[in-house]
Length: 312
Length: 323
Image 1 (cartoon, chains in turn orange, blue):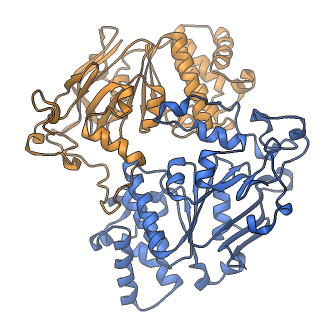
Image 2 (cartoon, each protein chain N blue to C red):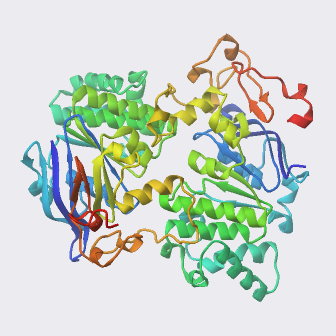
Image 3 (cartoon, rainbow over the protein chains, first blue to last red):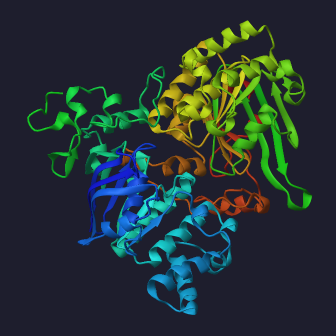
């Protein structure tokens, strides 16, 4: 349904690319997880799809197609490409208007996207709030964001996103600021909405375990480059790319703390993980494309170039 | 004697008309050289507990004893203040942006212990080496350091006064997964070599499991369960602990099978119901929970649980030896 291909994003006036050759697909009713550390470009990829890139950044190439319709020209001009894509954010309270009651914010989304009259929209807003699992929707509709908990604000935001009847929902770290018991509730809600409406979800997070729970497929990013993409079961010990393996091991392994972290830092030429990679060699100075290494499984590592498999 | 002893600690914010209890009678003891973790969700009082323990806030009632001495008196004398130190959650805001790393690390030694300038400088180099940073880092300002490096500086600063107890408030929460592992290993190595005691405040169960010797689970200002780390993770007793552990996402599909998603949210601490504070979200709630608050009681040696549904014996009925 959503097909992103070869997306390049750079800083205006600089030759360097922040996102390089980023491709992924989201099917109807499918949850695709993008996972990466800070600075991996996962949020930037979602902003590019939404047409929300800041002015200092520009789309340099690639294609973003929703149900076959090309969105990239609109996105390049800075127009919001389509109401068919909605987004929910990491800090739900700051994503809401602090001066407007929650119900009114949902109602406005309905007025703008479905052309409902003000009174119909207000009534429909209550129904929407009920649909996202809010007990006492009338009370919450009258509340301002500061009177609601973080979990409640995220539900309001989801109600607004669903009011646009999106084909694709982008969820950028939707539960990072929430407690785990509330996170479990929000995950259940997103799953129910997907089953109910058949929309696709692009689920962005730094938490591999959350991806393993929520997603059907996973896209691993580092330094603005897609490292590996596969069905989510790959996280059960079938990951091939050195970076994915490194991430999985970092969760539970005894690590040598004397290796000081390099922070947000990546190679600008060649493979962006090459300077942290234990397998790096000369061939890594060239930018690796995604090599197909199995059914629905691709890895951007020269180790997986045809004929060199097993050489590692 | 335990290094840190917390007895009947209460902390109420606000005035009588709008009182918000953050701690509602917390008892805890931490043996020297061990790590006790406090886990719980936002609003459970874990950060308040940490701040009262280091003396940043006075308790409303109850005692915090360090080696048997009340900490309120300790915090007034400089030489004693260095015995308890703290590492904060956000290294980017807890480091002075205008101080170079060397000056940040130097400061507590100068203020709390004094000594010749040259001695302090060599101590700075020594501590930076402990946290895995070379002397070149002394001249960096916080913005020139990554999040993991900033947290190493914050840990170095806390160690400069050679404290006996360090309160770690979410030390890994703002770090990426790969960096988190290194900070955990670093903290453990420091404890092994110096014998420092940690009170670790965290909601990150992976960090807790890898550092802590025992764990106290808090809910709305009360410790609802306390046990050694292996017991708590493998056979939790309190329904809240069970739900909390089960709610954490897992890479292992087998762990997701029997999840009970807790309904609702943590109630407003200013309007707590009578009886057990967990009653409205509890899958095991019955009539008694709505009228009488449960007390922390012994479910097995070393395993304390505050729940009517768990078979327990009152603490005072157990000989002190098995506590």
